[in-house]
Length: 300
Image 1 (cartoon, one colour):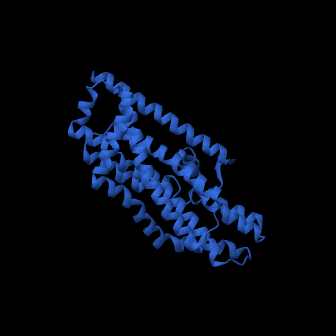
Image 2 (cartoon, helix red, strand yellow):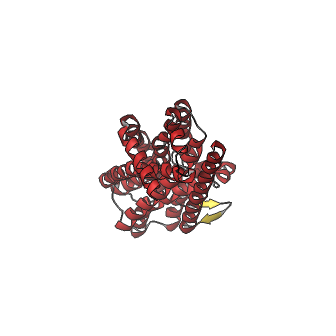
Image 3 (tube, one colour):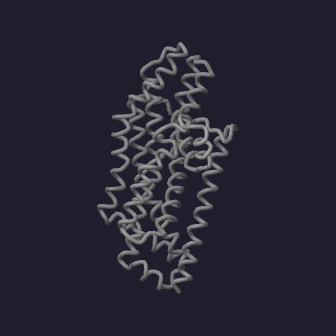
């Protein structure tokens, strides 16, 4: 335990000491929020307004703002929890390039302890950045239309925590096979460009073809995005219900923004989404530790 704490402290210090790596991780969510608010907010607003007005419902600007703000915030956080983890986890590859990893592997520290040290350090760094992004998103929602309760905010924080664990586990496994700055930059670019589409953050999964929807339903990140959607928009849907909006209209909107997810026609409950996400994180962690143990045995 002492060795693990020392490694976590060492890796975390090095992350914050590297200003380039730290500011790259920190500025990514802010850039995404500006881009989302500038280019996607009007698209989301038109979609929500047309859906509600088509049902003959009178819609206030605040309610539309709550819909847009909840979808933008959930989209942003769903992407950042994974992409920021790749930025924060660059230290693992940098240690290979500088030779520090070789020095650590010849020490009495176990390979599994070394692996967990990188993981926990990346988790802490990514959480700090993503919780800062969450605070900015909540301020944005407060400005455009606030319908969240304390419970909703706490569940959003839990969702972010689990998605960061998921993103850190994925980045740890992938970065285990990388050995140069060029490789990590290439992988980071691919993940940043593609993950948002695969998890339904850039475009709702309901807009994809049936075949692609079935394929994406096997990806755990999809359920993390849906959890964020549900908790960011729960208050909005409750307000719609209080204003006597037709229940079928509300359910149709939930379907359209992926609050309701279906696995081969069967709706997935929130509790099942949590089970899928937690189970995936545990599985990925086991794989990551085993990879490092096998690699450590080969080196010795």
